[in-house]
Length: 225
Image (cartoon, rainbow, N blue to C red; front, side):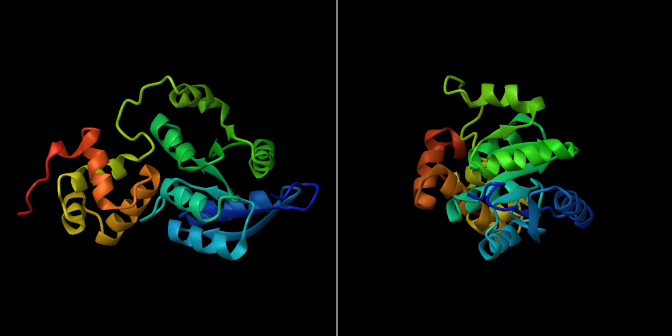
């Protein structure tokens, strides 16, 4: 992993809002020891640009179309495990923080963080350390404690991913899941790929079995209309 002594920290910025993306790019480019090498507006672009530019750190937003930042982080961790992900977002709720860190993020900052905090965090995650915004750190540590019982099944999944998994466990086809949740069928397929990765299963059948063991799907398949 690149260190400040060896050269600048190469950064990819991922945010679906052009103004925010340009602002973050300008901010990071103004910091000593940081080089912005690529930008992305969607989760799919993150994966493509990361493979092309091989950054040290991806500065990742959570809310992006089709593939959100949590899912992109999970896929990136499997694809390029040496690339660190620093989530920079406005969301500070427990579930989003835990989901992002479980997906493989090494850092979590809130938008509006000061330059020095951003630079320090970039250096830390590039060096393999984990850094959480002070305002959410104590709460996150409590949630990640091995002794803490998860309030919901599969806390590593996002709310939408659990909704998809629940319907698949009922026997829904991808098309029916898409119609039920007002999603594109391709989005359902993408979310299922992320679910399989997070659950460590090889496919739909194993996912359904695991989901029903944890109370999803009503315990039995529902017949298609």
